[in-house]
Structures are given as structure tokens and as C-alpha cells.
Amino acid sequence: MDAPLRPTFSRRAAALTSSAIREILKITERPEIISFAGGLPSPATFPVEALQAACARIFADNPHAALQYGPSEGYGPLREWIGKRHGVAPGRVLLTTGSQQALDLIGKVMIDAGSPVLVETPTYLGALQAFSLFEPNFVSVPSDESGLQPEALTPELTAGARFLYALPNFQNPTGRRLPLARRQALVERARAQNLLLVEDDPYGELSYGGDQLPSLLSMNPDGVIYLGSFSKILAPGLRLGYIIAPEDILFKLVQAKQAADLHTPSFTQRLAWEAVHTGLLDQHIPAIRALYGAQCQTMLDALAAHMPEGVTWTRPEGGMFIWVTLPEGMDSLTILEAAIARNVAYVPGAPFYANNPCTNTFRLAFVTVPPEQIQRGVAILGEVVQTALAA
Ligand code: PMP
Image (cartoon, rainbow, N blue to C red; front, side):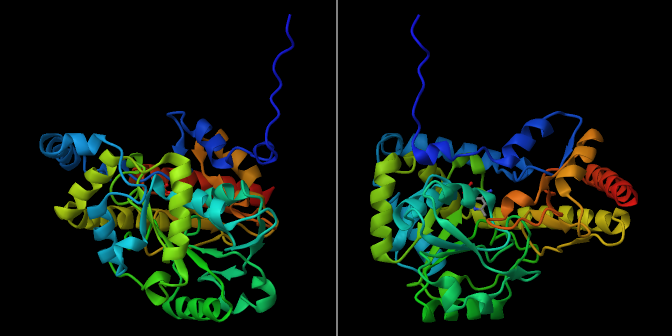
């Protein structure tokens, strides 16, 4: 009998690991689990009927174009709309298959093995995964409860960095929003040090109060690559995101996009165009803000009622996540085992750190869980932490 085939994987494939979140999500699919682990938007916010009507319009009006190959840069009218929304020329816009693809494309065109890449502490796990394939040297930028600390960006820290990956709005995983003064200081420092900024902004529209701070892009369009997404304001299954970048960078990204998948699906882009040019999206966003704001408040109230002294957490003004810090010395992975035994789950904090993980942290997602389950789940978490503290 032939010996079984033993593939020789590339060095980068051999180094791949599965996302800790996906592994946990497998457990949390059990119906009895109250899961604060997933980062999914609430399906209650998907504008199903409006999208169904939009699909029918596309098939009635121009089905062949919608089913045909299209330009790598993306569907013209949608590029124009995005450009207008962000105050940039449409030639700076590239549609991507979700903003996760944008992270991959940026990795491809900006990172060599060993290149320094600056990231927040903690940062979005999916970006660490996407960039890791290109074997960077991650450098963690000190951050506090308001987010990234611009004064930490000394010439020594930023030396040779290909870019700084920043999440100024309602960051995944902490829910933090970078205050205006820090945005200004960050952009100034980056400009002075010739440091490219990558601004990942899938949650910017989800400010509960509707107020928005200026994007880093708006402060320095020639020094920022901006990533937008329709996942949290329309539907993530559409897999639709975009990049705004200075022309020379966009040109390279388009080449990488072509090599990756030719272009973002034509049909999906036209569907999004229907949603934006008819005003559906802008009518729809306030309902998402209201729902997520109420869900967040329910969880904040439950944390205040049930968490023992010494536990702290963020108080987001938008987005989908709360970040909890347990007393020093506690391990959120150990607590997770006890929580899962009582049918409650969350994501431990360690995988969100590029270096030196704070193992006493964890992320709570609150938008898909009904309010009474939020209360019950957080009460159980409070008991589990209390028991661990007393042990
Ligand atoms: N960036 C951040 C910060 C995210 O939280 C997510 C989704 N979890 C993404 C990018 C990817 O989003 P998508 O590919 O659905 O646009």
C-alpha cells in the first residue's frame, strides 16, 4: 500500500493557528449556553425585506451586469458614494470582500518578514491573524483606558515601522473610543515621523448618541489607509468592505486584490448601492444604535449589580463590546472553564495582545443576547468570579 501523502506546508502555513474565538464559539453553539463570546451583529438589525426588494430591482433592471465580472477597484457608483461620504476622490476607493480582506491585502503589500508593525494594546485579534501570515515583528503601543497613547510613539518605538494599526472608534475588543485630542496628537506625531496609519473603522457609525469624532483619515488623507465595512450597518454575510488610501498605495492594493479574487462580487456591490442611494442605510442606522445602546446599558447595569469589588470594565459609548479586567493575578481562562460549566461563555483577553498578554482580562459581546439572559449570564459570571476570589 502507498504511504499516506505528507504535504509540506509553507513556513507561513505551518505557523498558522486557529482563532481561540472560533474554538470557543464551537462550545457556545450549544443552545443552553448564554454566550457573550461571539462578535456577531444582531440579526434583528438586518433589513431583510428592504434587501429582498433591492434584489428584485437588480434582477428586473440590470441582471446581466450584476452577474458579470466587474472592475477590480469596485462598482463605480458605490465607489463614488463612499468617496463622497469620506470627502475623498472615488479614485482612492477600493471595494473589498469584507474589511477582513483589506487587512490581508495590506499585509501583502506592506509587510516583509521581520517588518515592525505597530499595534494597540490590546488589538483586534483578526488583524493579528491576518498580518501574522506575513511574519511581521509586532510592536505593542502602550494604551490606557482612553486608548492608544500618542506620546508613547517615540522615534525609537516607531523606527522602521511599516504602519501603525489603529482602531479609534469603539475598539474591538475594548469598546474604547480615542478622544479628539489624542486623535490630533496621533496624526501629528505620525506625520512628523513619516509613519503610515491604518485606521480600521467598522464601528464608527455605531455611536449610541449618534455623535461622531473626526476620522484620522479626515485629519490627514495622505497619511492614512482607512478601512470601512458594511458588516455592522447592513449585514456581515454580504462580505463587503472598502479601503480608502493614497493613490500610490491604492494602486498596489488593487494589484494584490486582482491576484486574490479579481474583484468583490458584482451583485453584492449593487445590492449595497441600492441600500445607500435609496437612503435605506441612513434610515436604518439609528435603529441599530438604539438597540445596541440599550443592550449595552443592560449589561453595564448587570455588571454593576453583580461583579465583586476589584473587577473593572469599560463603559462604551458605541459598538458591541465591553472589556472586563479582573483583579491582578486572576486568570480569565481558568474562570472561563468554571463559567462554561455553568453555561455562560465569553472570550478571554490574552489572544488580543500581540505581546505580553494581560491574562486577567476578557471581552463581553452584548448585542445578540436578550436582556433577561444578559442579566442572568452576568449574575452567574459574578458568582463564578466571587467563588474564584474566595478560593
Ligand atoms: N476589523 C474589526 C475591528 C472587526 O471587528 C471586524 C469584524 N469582527 C473586521 C475588521 C472584519 O469585518 P468584515 O470583514 O466583516 O468587514
